[in-house]
Length: 300
Image 1: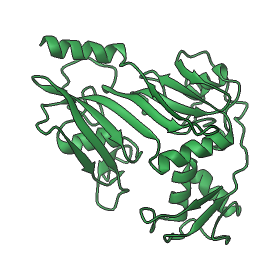
Image 2: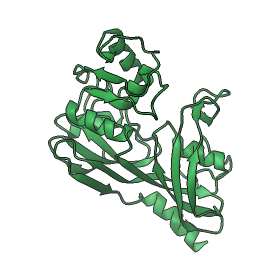
Image 3: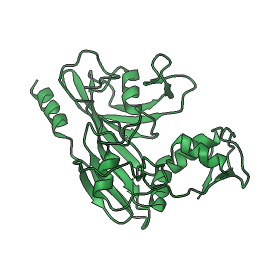
């Protein structure tokens, strides 16, 4: 698979660019670069190579099937759509997407292995089929690839912004403006490496937003991701002074509602089908706890 470096991507390191375009982890990409499977203009270079506009990045990605220690588990989730190339699923709040930190059970990947016959293997041994992620306490739509060609196509669409990901969230406070764009770089928080923060020198992150409905103390907001950084919407909302309701990491210390997690839901997902090119759009209803909070805000 070949990728052309455009003006928006010039200046990126090769390993960063390749990870974004392929959907692979940085560690997996570095391994592939070291093994000569990723090249620039036909030549082997190091992961820190700085790309220029017009460079051609070639990637030959070997299949990597899920390891035997990842056992299928009957964990409930909704399959919104499925065919031979992909599935679109509605992830419930509280379900971690893939194993991490030595924990290999109780994740969406375990559930996918139980429900789906095939999953792409190019995203490492513990993330079969995973094209993009949602935080554990964020619910909503995710695309899952059943083969490597579908995986690469969906990853490329996300990187090139032809796929559309729309979220709805309830924020603290009444937002005065009707809409706007948050364009603030994100990186690891210097005080807490487990968290993300707006910081100079971080990776560019762009979130478009519009107000859907205002309440006395809160606002229902719709978000469109232009980039897909870790915790992007949550951190951008905190930066703007309107954190997501129920967000225990980036929200208010004192919460009005006893909630299991942040009121953030991936409600709409659009992309071109990897095999047919047909434009496909999927929508997911807001989860029950989200609707309950909206009812309380309306009644209050």
